[in-house]
Length: 262
Image 1 (cartoon, one colour):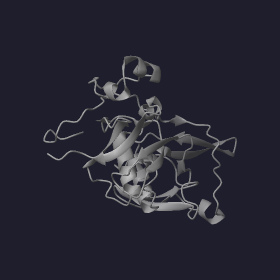
Image 2 (image 1 turned 90 degrees about the vertical axis):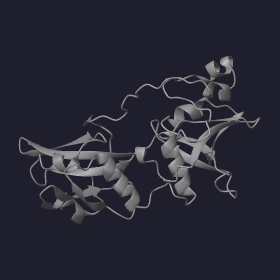
Image 3 (image 1 turned 60 degrees about the horizontal axis):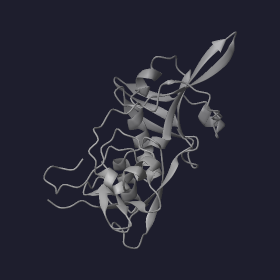
Image 4 (image 1 turned 30 degrees about the vertical axis):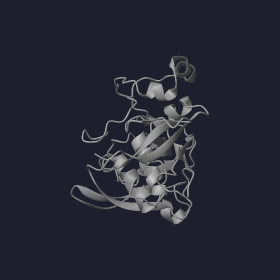
């Protein structure tokens, strides 16, 4: 969100999904972006439950699959072995020291940093818990897709040793969004981002900054929609970017540029 000390910039508030035809019937996209539509809470797009995703659970290394997910514990802390599947071709797993309060979202952020995947949309990563039970003497394995707020160490301690493990998977199905970045990097024209439907403009801004080797936490840059006539309106930081990009036609584009100084 823009600080009140900054020069006011036209914004689009979250909460209304408008089709391209609706936009054009009411005026230009830029004109629509200037309407102050009150925000509403967005439904959570990821839920905890069983899954039949068809992910192969076989480890690439037999020696790795025989190891316990939890190497050691110390009160409220422990070391979780996170199997990375298609996240990094050079690694079968990553051992992370976590606490009982550590969430799935925090685990994914840590893995993204450790594997230097800062240009990847973190919302495209999913974490599963594979739970093993026995039926008539035979092992039955079930996959649970974990909510970002779940606490994996707590969940692990609810099961017998060696009867569960955690898997992080880079899911497919993202949407390619083009962000013009010549204001940020004069030698560049645009960056193509593969984004999840729930990814906000703020997250996309940080991805573009990281791809240009800039500080992702530099809050002086933001995303705008600009028309061919040069008129632009800022996209609010909490707005999902994919739905907005799908509204735009050939006469508009998304670009990153510096916010006005106070």
